[in-house]
Image 1 (cartoon, rainbow, N blue to C red):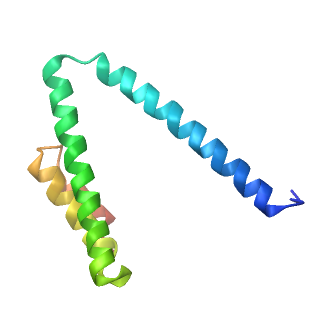
Image 2 (image 1 turned 90 degrees about the horizontal axis):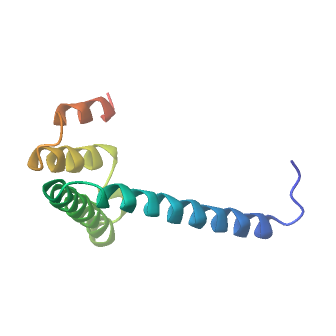
Amino acid sequence: MFLADPEDSLHQYEERGNQLRAEAEAELNRKIESLPHQAKCDVARVMGSVKNTIHGLLEKIVTEGSEAVGRDQIVDAFKAMAAENNIGDPSIFDKLRRN
């Protein structure tokens, strides 16, 4: 497909991405609201932990440079987060490691 103006196309993709993100967020919120109270608390705790993990990785990139955070560091961070929150089997993250 030939695009007459790449800037217009990029803007359209950004708008569509924002629309899809908003729809997904609304659906997630509906599903969370239908959960029992304890499950809502668990979801909030895990979402906070994910946010903190991402923040920690971004902080390391800002302070040490993008080369400081590679695939293995990301895998380690999420594996530790999964273990801390007792989410499934953290060893599943080992499959994401570079061999």
